[in-house]
Length: 241
Ligand SMILES: C[S@@+](CC[C@H](N)C(=O)[O-])C[C@H]1O[C@@H](n2cnc3c(N)ncnc32)[C@H](O)[C@@H]1O
Image (tube, rainbow, N blue to C red; front, side):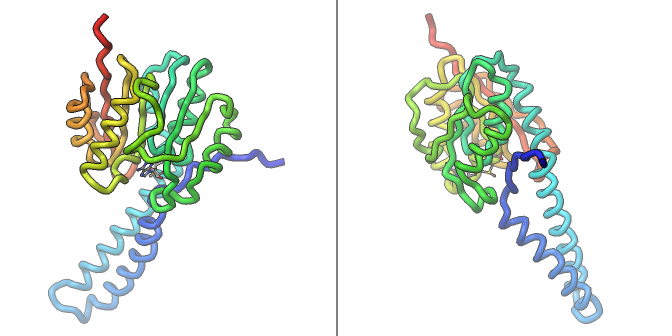
């Protein structure tokens, strides 16, 4: 019998598909235009096509290999005790959620997502719960459907809040700020956050500061994911005794 394998999904499937189709189309049209078109248009199309094709493979490499390395880097730096409650914002198929649950024999891992098919292929609550079952952590995992801008959790619920490639999907500046406000709200005093993304990380850092999170750091770029990501970390100050 073949062993069931978890599937953590292809990120931005539409973009990858577009690059895989658009890349060769540009290469072929550029190739034919090189002798005909003036001002190097053929060369420009040809090399743009090659660039898109390479980007598609780098993005697939991230989804099927690199993001697991980046995930471990984020979780390693949290140095979990094993009894924390952790929230994965925009958990998708459960990349951070399930790996965190494995490190929490006495804790619990909670995910929230609205299961966008644009942001991750074959995205669903069922797919995430199936991965949790295959990875043997069903008992410690909880998954909620919902929007990160208005999370269905009381104030001060979680010891740790994490996110990977999720917050940038909120299309407006104000919406992303609401998501950061929610993360700060649901963290316990003394709770920590680690948000990994390929853009807007400076914005997350500023917004976290505005919402009272301290010790904020933005990592150097991490090249396991394409485009490269940074991790924003911070801690909600403990309430004075
Ligand atoms: C690129 S996927 C990353 C998923 C997962 N974190 C991972 O690393 O594999 C982005 C995820 O963010 C979710 N998402 C986008 N906007 C959201 C929102 N406003 N609230 C909750 N989840 C959202 C999408 O449904 C998707 O699952």
